Length: 379
Ligand code: F6P
Image (cartoon, rainbow, N blue to C red; front, side, top):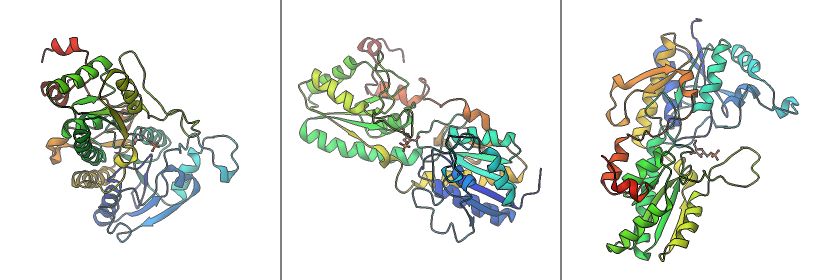
């Protein structure tokens, strides 16, 4: 292991609230506690290929703690192992990983902190096999990175989604409507489950529990019979019926193979056919990723950033910062690290034994179970 004098820092994948808190914590901890210099790469791994990088000093990170987004820029389309560098004349994607390793060496970078989700961890794990000393920090609003019980960004997304559900309540009640809100999360239902319960949604649909349309319709009708002439449905973008499949946007998208979107509109159509009540839908979309981070995400991001620097300081590499217990009970002992490869083993889904699922059932929140399942529930 080389003595560290300079570290690199980058934010891979899409943005998430709290990124700037992490950048600030890594930069300040590295400079103030270890005397290391910090180089920030622009737009994730893209900056490592193109050379867009900047010195991060104490002044660079001043005042950024409450700001959303990332001061370094983000790109969720750059994998250096398969990247088309148009400026370099690439006509097809090719392996630029050696260019990245060379870039680090040319800039005198001895170790790197990467902030990202499973894709970023996978790239970083491969770079570590090429000799790069690297520590990862898990980031995503989806909360689905394997190896950690929580990612920063999730709390802010849940707060925003809860705020949206609160607002839908008042208009739904006034117009006696069924209002459906589509929430992010890809194949995981963390945001929909937490915000749905926190916002008092009557129906919460998540990918982990394929739903039955009849159960959803029955719940709405039951509410109406009991005098509640409105219903709120929180649906995760990756939710699907027991016999169906997830819905993607069909837009001839050139960047992605698949982009989630459309389940709320589909539900609106299907329920409208089955109900006398008016049904409307809304997609909350990137509002969940934008804006200022909650206090919790700022604190979590700060802890994770400092811890990553300490891991590098103690000679660790190819590991990811992790929280070992559920988010409610953070203490210093909850902060740990796991081999980075753990994060690459697929998304972390909501376990069906999760206390919020049990609680939802006990509160008579419909989570899409068939009526038979509900009446036979063994809690
Ligand atoms: O992974 C975070 C996330 O916001 C998902 O919840 C969502 O499906 C996806 O990113 C959207 O990505 P993009 O902004 O690239 O369309």
